[in-house]
Length: 454
Image (cartoon, rainbow, N blue to C red; front, side, top):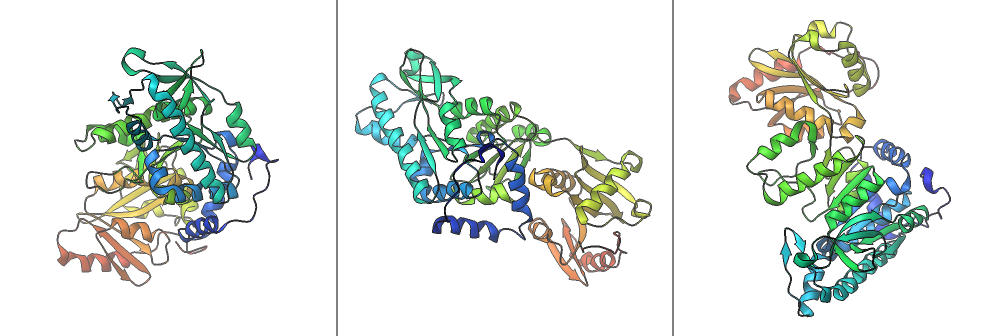
């Protein structure tokens, strides 16, 4: 499937868990277009650079089957991510049983020399357990509990045998990936003089990401997403436009703030094409292979232009975007008849929201997003700018438009009128809705009446 491991052994028939993962993935898709698009995109990346996946010990304890099934499924389509796991809960239990108190300083586990044998056994056992689960699910995985992270002692007097990665030995990882196996790494390092050390999982991931420059960095968590102030998942974050606002928000504190800082640090060290996903093991395939995703997608992203005058809009690029997004060109005099009010457009002109006015109400005339831009979260970034600008908003969509699922999720109300569904947000005078729905449904089409309906 991928350029970098054409000689890898072919996967055998899918096991029942893997078939279940495939069925689950397909159930979230309108057709096979999305999965083909993502597979083509992933296949262009060297296998060792496809993805680094971080898994906490709690996820392994509570969601091992789902995690193993997801990793096995990726191998059926030729992908073998590098998995880095911690083991916090397991280490707490094992150290307690050995009579060694658990102590942390600045988020790091204090690791006295007598804790090292417990650390080695616990993390190695956990590593083997995860590898075996992947194999039981029909996948192939390589156990690499140590030998990858060369490390330097951080503060022996204060933290004991805690190491910071200074060098990544890629030979074991590359050999496993080229053989079509998912390399499973534990957070154990060794110093130049041969001492085993405890490596913080975030530090291990950061070192791997710096070395590999992967296309994807994936955090598998119990919550499955970053959550907003009301506890709801945030589907996409564009750091260029969203980071400063998030970090100023009072509700972004504690673990959320630390996670945002860590993600920004990772993405600042990666190409613009790379991204970070936060999701659950049982939703990993949907997050990777569908535009809607299942978790939080974070990219460095690009600026969203706020255009208040028609002459500032690149009409040729906008027309091209609309044509590609809808499969039909706008009518010849589209911009003349529009009654331009405002536009929010990504710098690359791959996503745009274009508005006009109906009396005192903002009307969304076109929300055009290329498939690849949806996969990058650009559509979400444009939409957020739009609803900030227009808290009271109306728009319409053809009844067979596949984007209606999104529209229903973000609207406050909707009415079907003929071939149109008219949506609205923020309307505080319900007596005006019927007249506006009728007026909007009667507006003439703004796309050429040839090609597929959208």
